[in-house]
Image (cartoon, rainbow, N blue to C red):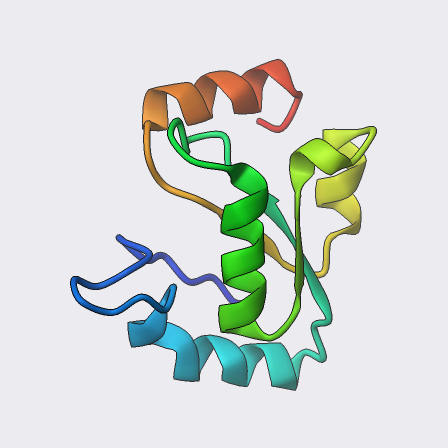
Length: 103
């Protein structure tokens, strides 16, 4: 299992999401033949979750879909090739994870 714990999505002055970690992330995506990811954007309180998914799709070169587009959040996670969790309000993230049976 590969786990990347990153503290911010963008660096100041760089519009590309995860630019500082892309070489390592893309290497893992290629090595594991990952074609898609599920984005858990619950902590993002401002901005569009779908827009965040689009930006991550462009940066990572794979299809990224927010968990809200699945009928069952639990099944989405169980079947995911890759899971991305956006940062932001960690209290709200924790609340939503519990409410959706993801803890």
